[in-house]
Image (spheres, rainbow, N blue to C red):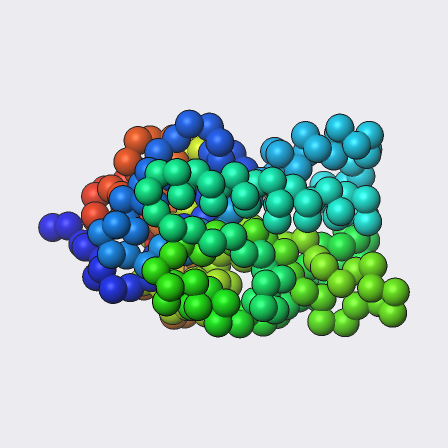
Length: 265
């Protein structure tokens, strides 16, 4: 039996990095859902585009314990690319496809507030508070909010160089979904979903099973923040989903309750 989400509820969709701009069906699917009456909120990444522009600026990446360090020069590029280029392109795509969209960032209206995650990582933030009012305002106007993952530093330095923080897009989507009490949170990625040790798709997991996959090391890399975002959001969100954004119609199929990707409840 299919599970269908009520049309008057909010759907938070995270698109990004790996599938963004790869001629997938994400934008048409978002517009289709919006025209059906769903209140769609889009959170986007853009890691590949940031990396390209960092290289163009001649900035050499630094890593701390395997994690990219965000110095001031890298932060400036990340903010310009995420809040400018990538956000504007995605808004333009949605409008061109037939729906109204408004570009926002985590800075807009103080939506996302954060603090330094680890001084060694530079200007990378940990979200500590979400004010959903800027998002609700856009939704009330009938448009799709398109959000770039940045946060307002709650305790910036006197010179203000760290007033803006770069935050993980997956984590941002989870916090936003939880604050909105969304009906579901969907991650569009470039794999079929969460895989087990035999590389087989896990179609459905409980919150506890999902966390055990991380603890056991079965889930790793970029899948960890997606799973954690889903499990954290379940406090107020109906379900979390990780689906293959390269498949035509994947987002619509997920909302329609079809067996696609991994569902975390």
